[in-house]
View 1 (tube, one colour):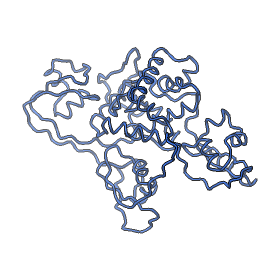
View 2 (cartoon, one colour):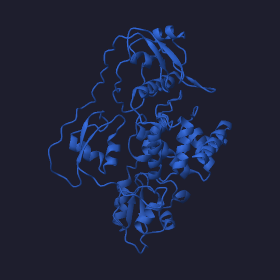
View 3 (cartoon, helix red, strand yellow):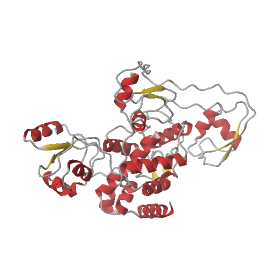
View 4 (cartoon, helix red, strand yellow):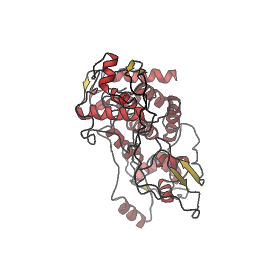
Length: 423
């Protein structure tokens, strides 16, 4: 996994791309009789030119686009040249080209109901059922689209349906997770899994960190590692697992507050050391994901492939990158607070949210993969050098441009190329 940079947004590229003057510009262009197109998340000049029946060169020239239009941003209004034999079509939602030559159509909406699973988001549910977040929220009386929870039943509106039984109102907030009462036991052993912490193990087994440390012959502040055997003191048995209350955003140094203050948490990786806020946030995210239901590695790989194809990014590259970063493990959180299968830090997650046009929650598998793929797509579009794009995911593209690839970055790029050949 990346030691420090972990999918950093390049400092010299746009982040949240919103244009308050877009409507005014569109009105001016429309008044002159020119056709316009408002850029949507995922658009490229090639998509827009094909959609309106013009050449990419004429589109770039008409709008004075730099770098051959490599970087256009959502909300930007482009003028469509009139010198074309094809009539411009009404703008529709344009999917980025996939790795194959065909562009799959979105699934047709179908009325029905779904039960929310751990890690689900309204945007993900809407995408799978060919509808919109707004339509689902309206059908279910949801005021805040972020507040859905595992077990909740949602009505999926059908295509063009305006009638039907009224949907039950969703609660205004997710219910608190209840912790079952531990039952007596005679102790035993526990094998540490990736993402485990002593405090998390103690909570699940109804005991304390100090008690596990004494029974296992370690100190309360000791680092634990996957595969390590710990002795559990007698008195309680593991509580039945229950999903933690869903979080709408990961912990970071701005929202961690006093959580885990005073606890010994990992704050170094290789030769890098992180601030107390970053280290505590990483520990809190690690503990959250250790108790959450997440997809297995095979499911993560399938999700990476489908998301990469949707964005027009080489799935083999993204599979190799995720393997290098986390081993396709959504529970992985580095001391730098790089989260999930794609090892994206919260600041980069906010940048990726601007790229795709919606808020991404890095704790959710779908959003985590979406963020990683969107970041790599932006890097590939921002440099002609493959090694710089891949290295930019690890080191940050601005740093690569200023300093070149660091020694550890060159090793990182070489590893990913090796994984790509082995996939």
